[in-house]
Each structure stands twice: as C-alpha cells, then as structure tokens.
Image 1 (cartoon, one colour):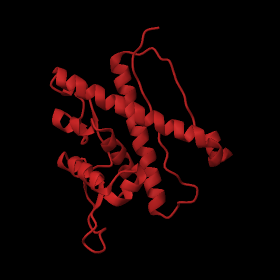
Image 2 (cartoon, helix red, strand yellow):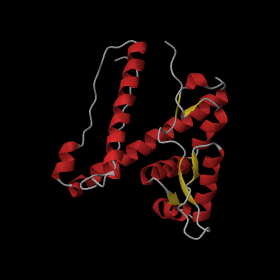
Image 3 (cartoon, one colour):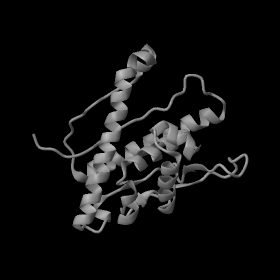
Length: 197
C-alpha cells in the first residue's frame, strides 16, 4: 500500500532550507508550544531583537509554516503568529532532489534538530528537582534495541505517530474543557534508525 502523504511533509528543498537557520527552529518550537504569540513575546524568550524575530517569522510564513493568528490583535498594530498546522512538519531525504545541496541542507536541519532536542532534555534534567517527584518519576528516557526490517520500522513509526496524535488530542480536549490542573507541555523525542554493533 502506498504511503499516505502528510500535510506537513516537506518535499521541496526551498521549504526545508527555511529550517537551516537554528533560530527559526527555535521560534517554530516556541510558537507551537504557545499556540500563538507576537514577535516581541518570542524575542524575549530567545533573547533577540523583535525586528530580527519578526523577519524570521515572515520567512517561515513565506514557506507556509506559520500564519498570522486571526482575531488576536487588540489594536491592529501587534501581529500575532501561530503554526500553520498542528501536524507539524517532517521530511524524507528521498523526497528531495538528491543533490549535494539537498544533502547539505538535510544535514544542517537534522544537526540543528538534534542540538535543539538535546538542549531541551539537558535543561529539564538540570532542573528536574524543581519539577518535583511526581514529574521526575513520570519522565523517562528509554532505548530499545530491536531487530526489524525497514518496512517494520516504517510501520512502527506510523503506529507511534498515531499514538502521539491520540495523546495530543486528549491533552487539547482536556485544556478546552478547563482541565488544566497539573497539565504541562511535554516533549517526547523518539528516534528509530539502523546500526551495526
């Protein structure tokens, strides 16, 4: 059965290049977590000038990753932003043109994502005592060593995507119902890749 295309799947190199800038990755992640924010609000979180953050948000908007959030501005002067799709974005190197330029862009984006995710986990780990025992006991870091075919790994990825969507929808529904007590943003990082010992 052919793979069903995802709405946020990047198949064009120019779109992928939007994330070769690490600040854009950081802004996208912050905006995704916040739901919506202004360039000034995001600038405070990344310790950058609002004009620079605004520039990078416009670049992300040009590629369809973020959009203006309707109805958020109280005076028409402030510009609110949101991610374009809750599904996020992803890519497969095989969908790109296979040139050295594409390989370099993929390497840059993946390196940036790994750095960003590692920094986020290190920050949590350094602050874990402040989160309290309940959160420290609930947090996890796991590694499983499995013997799979490429097709099985792809099937597993699909199942993990479906599981993540289900939990995301559960959290959204709870927030919409006012059930916010004890609810925090949670980041789950999973990698599946072949290796030879």
